Amino acid sequence: MARVCILLVMAALIAGMAGCNGSGGDSYYLTIASTYGGSVTTPGEETFSYAANTTVELVAEPDHHHHFVNWTGDVDTIGKVTAAATNITMYDSYSIIANFELDEGWYSLTIFSNYGGSVTEPGEGYFAYAANTTGELVAEPDDYRQFDYRFKEWTGDVDTIANANAAATNITMDDSYSITANFEWFDIIQVAAGCWHTVGLKNDGTVVAVGYCGYDLCNVGSWTDIIQVSAGHFHTVGLKANGTVLAVGWNDDGQCNIGSWTGITQAAAGFGHTVGLKADGTVVAVGWDMYDLCCDVGSWTDIIQVAAGLRHTVGLKNDGTVVAAGWGGYGECNVGGWEP
Image 1 (cartoon, rainbow, N blue to C red):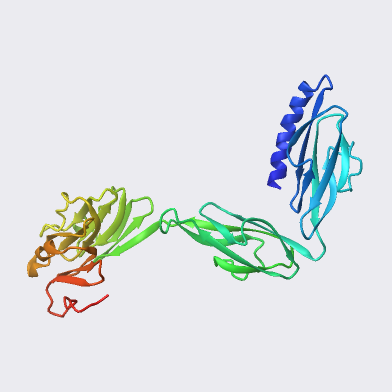
Image 2: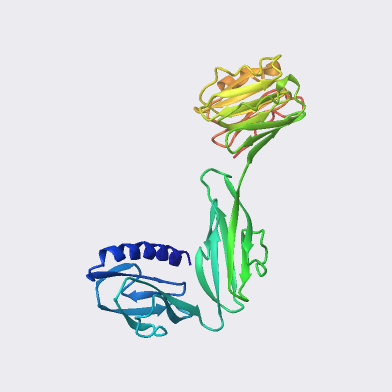
């Protein structure tokens, strides 16, 4: 019905103009629309201009499983309002609608979605189904950025939807229904757990933290443009979109001294040290360096991911092998035999 409403508004505006421009009887406007289930093929569906007293042919054609019902609107000069093929004589400016209905034994399903995604199966709009047919429904969130949106629920005429909370489900057509796929914005897109605190990265690039907040390790409320967070024992680290890094919390071993870092693509907070992966595949680290868990990473190359533990540091190489530095008293650094 949305297209009908839009055309009726246009018709009202055009009719107003016609009242002025057509005062001499030279021409009039005819605005034509249709309901779901068919279309006007002659002369078409839009606004047309005709000379006064012209007789205009009208032909309405139903879609499959529909039939024409009647013409409504300014129908006084239509030859036969219940005929799909008829005519209208232009004594004034008119607005008319071709009305269609479903055939017996058929029902309609009208599907919409809100912002954040779309219905990919069967699509969005108006569909006709035989009575008791089960139709597949699939709703997919947008992927403007990873995890931006998620499917929430189907609303509307959902009594015969198998699972209104499932993005992929089905509906049984016992009647004509209208449904909407609803999506919601992901607020928190990443979490990190420290010793006694938890950090959350929000979709807008800000950060929240709760738990033990000694050493100001939860003092992240002013951070912006963050794309990744990591929680250490008593410190918190945030990677900014520009490749620099922020850190707050306990700094007795210099684990928060990352202010000069640039070109970082991932940051990891350990017990008393912080590790940064650079865009060129090399690694930097600051903080507690007992067992060489910081200094030994300076020679690493071709790294694509890093992780920081209590007393050791681990790096994943782009060939699928793994390197480690630091204390290996429990064998935690025995990764040399790992193969892709």
